[in-house]
Figure 1 (cartoon, rainbow, N blue to C red):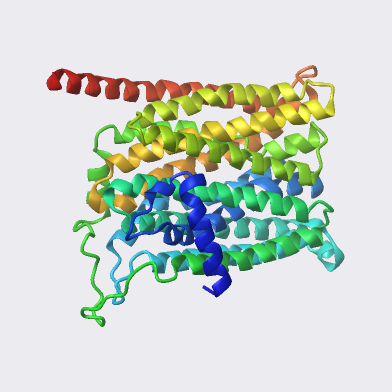
Figure 2: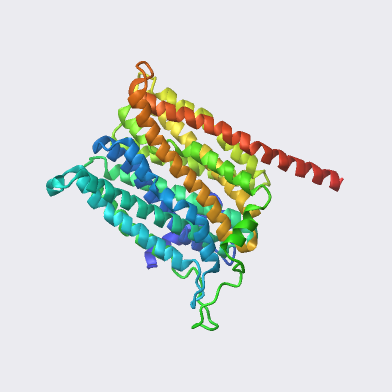
Length: 478
């Protein structure tokens, strides 16, 4: 890094212990400045998520008139790679390298794939917009190219996030690992907030050309951030530099044996089911929030893009609150359940915002509901992540994080696709008097309320089991 970057990182690190959640995860061997530098890969991931789920879906649906069902399917295409996150984590656990690296090669590959998707996307949008000579190309060419770009970006995000989190866990001592992973996800929220605000400012005067410039700039920033994040994070081998060997902590068996050992752990399957239900409940509206604000509440592109920042701020507040409470020994399953409870009034506020006559009042209620959705999702995500990390065997850190991420990403992909499809179907076939253009959106929001209730039902035995263990421990101690 140059002198300016080093000074900025030192200033950021000095402020961390006072203002950043999870800043107490730093240790003498792993200072906060190094943790923050590593966390830059999460900033790049957050930037891509804002583009895919926030800005692009609204532009494609509202400005480019692409059907919401097609957009929902495009945004959910990363679902194809989501189940492979567990395999990616396991492969990085056992990777053999003459340099002694096992995470950095995968982080580099994921970065290049993500960059490739961002490089293709502007040309796809040119065809979809019909500007200039691109207007002579068939529409399906733009749609196929956009789908390929979304697929590559998603594959890169899945790879870099899984391996980056595993690398962060490797570098941290066992007692600090949950906090370190929490810090990584907090930086994801920071990345989403900053990106949403910057994109909102750059796209205030929207044009297809301006959007293409934003995407191209994001591709370059992704390379820079991930390069800084991975620089000198893994030490090179000094013994037998010409011989490729596995890491000393790598599991000895194959993927099947490691997966069987993990999935048969205490309540592993119930935890993953709860993660799936909760993630679907908090993700089905992702592709619809900004179009809902533009089509139903008449908000501008800049205003609806800032909603993504509100969602990220809520998630950041949720992670910060969960960090404070869980560090005192609270039950992570109870924290996740509390996040699901918060989501219920949040979605009701979003639904209610459409019935207000004042545009300003509708925008405020809608923004508050979006903020609380993010807050509930932050509580739920941190609770389930902490529970997963607490139960992860020492030699299966990558696999455990990959399994959690695979279920979360798969559930989010399915939910996003269903959200767009159900919105189109209900809007097209709903009887008159069901709310007009808002009927499709409201149907999806009500379905998310049902999923939140299902999440609470699934989590209830886990919280009861925790209470039983604590009571048995108190009786034994007495």
